[in-house]
Each structure stands twice: as C-alpha cells, then as structure tokens.
Length: 135
Image (cartoon, rainbow, N blue to C red; front, side, top):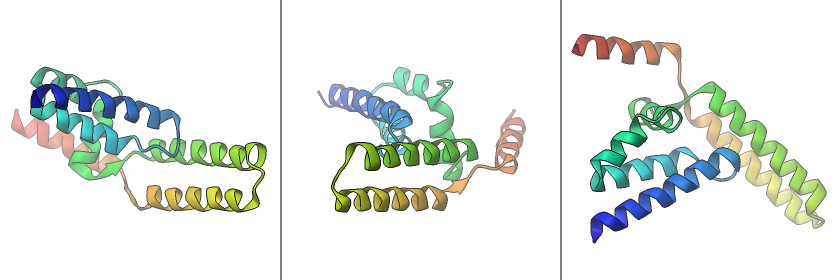
C-alpha cells in the first residue's frame, strides 16, 4: 500500500513540477525532487525514467549534485514571474493593496531565485571529469 501511495504522490508532485515550469509562482525543482524521492522509494523503473528524462533529469541532477540551477532557468523563471505578476496586478486586480502584495511576492521570489547558486561550466566539466575517472 505504501508503495502505491508513494507512486501516486510522485506523479502528483511531478505534475505540480511541470506546472511550475509554466506558472512562475509554483516552484519546479522542489516538486521534481519530491517526485524523484517518492519514486526512489517505490519504483526503481520510474525513478530511472525521471532521472534520465531529457527535461526533468537535468533539473534534478544539477540540484542534487550542485545545489544549483542554470542561468537560463533562472532567467526564464524571473521573466515569466514578472510578466505574470505585472499583467495580473494591472489587468485583473483592482485592489491597490493586492497589487502591492503581488509585487512584494514577486520581489521575494526573485530574490530567492537569485540566492540559489548558478550552475557554471566548471561544475559541469567537473562532473564530466568525475564520470570519466569512474570508467
């Protein structure tokens, strides 16, 4: 029973992680990490799939190994965040206090994104060298 609950939880968090790619206020990496953790404890086959996935695998691997995300991911996240927040604040919200709250939230999320280490070429080269030395 626990195995099936973990698989269901893994797919729910994977779905939320995918939504996080599109919706700027929903974090991608934490949900993908949770998903990988659920799959690691429940299904080796699904865990292997998500770790080796063309899109999700790099998010998970980079964060696990380096606690970092790519500059491209940071830039896309921040651009989508501000486009969504500003369009919501000025086209869909009429209450001034709510507009201020939205801008405050966007500022806080932006500062959080900036505080996460940026994945560098040196990190990637170091990882490749370690993998070559293993072989």
